[in-house]
Image (cartoon, rainbow, N blue to C red; front, side):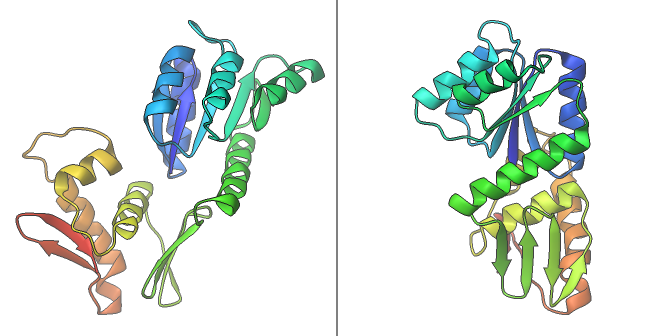
Length: 222
């Protein structure tokens, strides 16, 4: 799942990004309201965390523009203002939740998960299943044959991408873009290493291969 952070304070944005990555989310950052609005309209996100006091376009105006354009992206507002009036204004503008600064990251994470559950009930499934392999997108749990498999965040994201595309060959380049979100040197073996670690946990203990290499093309879950 991918989250947009719109925050002009670099220290706060970095804190949020690192925490969310450790929780297994993919993250994209914007430092002002106009950039945040552009990214939200042009890229698929599961949720946005938006500060109110932003340069170029304030957070509430940005959310108002999103709602006017028909985007139903769940939004959590961050604000230094903790008054009832500020919260009401934020919610009336179209945000789904409001959290005052300073905040606990654990509380923010809980609110994000709650919003994603609500959004998932109305749209996308909250779990992926292929044969005896299941992936819980909200609790970040992986099971195969009734046994829980512990994965690191990037391993989880790699498996999620393969499961969303099961039966379809995905190239090394698309895996890099969707899982690592960087363009690495073509000589890097980061994808191969990630697939190897995933196979060690997903395939090896169960005797039946699900992750296959299609030489010259990429990988497929089938």
